[in-house]
Length: 235
Ligand code: ATP
Image (cartoon, rainbow, N blue to C red; front, side, top):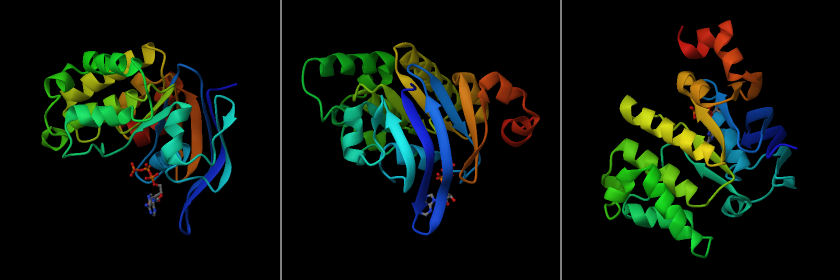
């Protein structure tokens, strides 16, 4: 049984059907990517898993439990954390306060351990602990969004476009850290428009087009697929 199993979900924004029957799995400890153009449904897939935009049909299971109708404010208790696109840090709160929010549902001494781990992964955040999040660069806010998600101690971390709007040097740093997070045992579902980064980081991937999965394979095979190369790798 996979850690995450998404079966034939359909998701709507009013009358618009954004997901037209998406199925995918993520195994324990795996990195899996969703690639596709603007509007393909990548973010909506993550939003449906996290309960922000619930699926209207189909089923989502996590660790064997049906989570299809679990609301967003409870999903984190199941072990799923989302670092959303556009980062969504609280700009007037400090770095430390933003991180503390990631652990708001937890109690106990492990929270301090996790804070230390986040600071080890992203030393920049420790340096900026008392700084207001809104005054940091885009890359630093991206680190903060990932750090905040990790403060939930998730079994599955979902990342929506971690490279978006960030200088290449910081993107590299963020991707190194994604590797470290995964090696510590956290499964990762990664949404990227930059298929190069995504296929380097992931073991397997799904290609989405207009709300459907059109290809699913391991990363090496996707890299060699002429259609993927033409549409998403710019080769
Ligand atoms: P992007 O990289 O642009 O975010 P995506 O693959 O993540 O692309 P989604 O954001 O999931 O795509 O969008 C899927 C479809 O749902 C698109 O047709 C989009 O226009 C539509 N959509 C997304 N959000 C909304 C919304 N809040 N209201 C109405 N339609 C929406």
